[in-house]
Length: 48
Image (tube, rainbow, N blue to C red; front, side, top):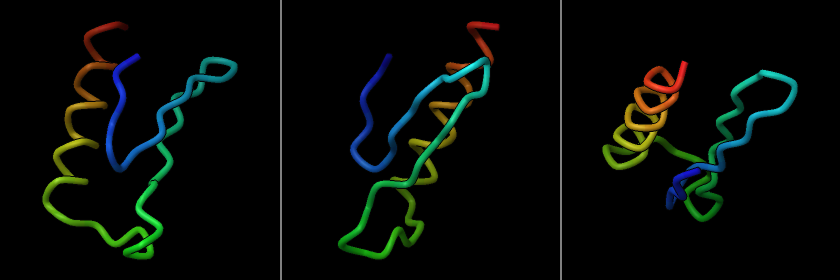
């Protein structure tokens, strides 16, 4: 599974978990985090 700078991605019991991992900014969303979320979801959709 691809590694991301601001996300932790796990699949448990068929559930796709995205956990924000940017504690220094209190998990505030920025352009890079939105991009990582988008890429992660698109990659998951390709695998289904």
